[in-house]
Length: 442
Image 1 (tube, rainbow, N blue to C red):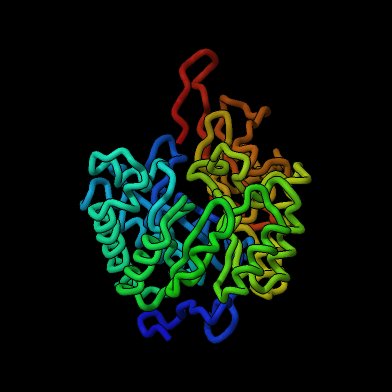
Image 2 (cartoon, rainbow, N blue to C red):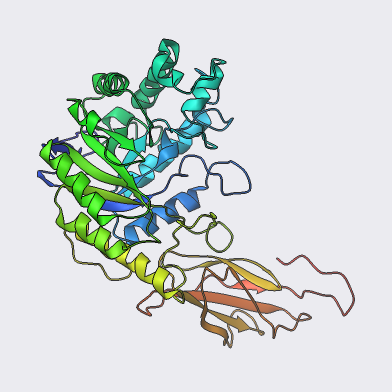
């Protein structure tokens, strides 16, 4: 048992099973790749604390017991990355990661963290190390000793990092489910993977180590004694392939997970059923979850795999798939599906003709009320359960722009249970008189 954080224990491996608190641990949850560094905010920047906590609460609402997040360690080459330049470490970035790990722990979640990315994304990848040394061959990441030692130095810095919020070194923090050598590494030589796995274990004796491959189960890597977890990705979902991969890993006494899968297409229910019933599948992470934005609506990421919960329930097929993912979260942890939580109070952020509000976890729809006489009312329903966070904003077409108005808003979950009202928002007259300039709304 971890004595530094008695609420949590480390995930261990017993053969092809994960063990937590003396029991078999199976999980489901989302990929939330952007938690350490984001690309969806009009440029590359750190996500706000609200966005971090909102998306983690959404994951819990969906039955998640673990998440996977690339940018908590696969973060290189950008000025706001963990390692903006070779051998240089960004304390501001690391403090952001500290907050994320603390927030994950506060929700009793586990996190799988890749240490580098195969692809050259905004948060860097193995190509970043190549460019730092002025090289051009991408395979030098695996072959050049100077690069290998630089990557090891980076790994050591991450594992030995002491969280400024908790005082716990990452290598001693049971919040971490496992370290993943890299995301979707292509053609990584067996000897290189074994060297990196053994290096991680030489520093960190508490955590498991995983290896991931975009193109299915990498059977060669199962011969590495200290490698605990094999990770395969599925685009599109393929229940037969999942079943076959899990059985191979089980036969070789290795833990197996589906580290990514594309949920919007293919026979999702069959895929989730195989994951549930084949005990060789220890966990699944769908791609990928986004929560609410700071001012209004959901954070938008324009690929077909972005998931907003509960999402647009007028889109029957997509909504049904999202609910299947929620059920799967509880199925994998052996729990009955939980009731939908009661939404918290929204926050009205701006009224300039259109009404904008900060959404809340689990909100299926909202009701908006208006008073023309002050905070005491009387209140009139101007929009009854007719907008969601997919609509982003709502315009009061009946508003008298020459008069003060007061608004409040409340959310309903999918069961129709309402939450508390927002704080009342006083909207000043939009115009002094017809034809004059617009006032700034308070």
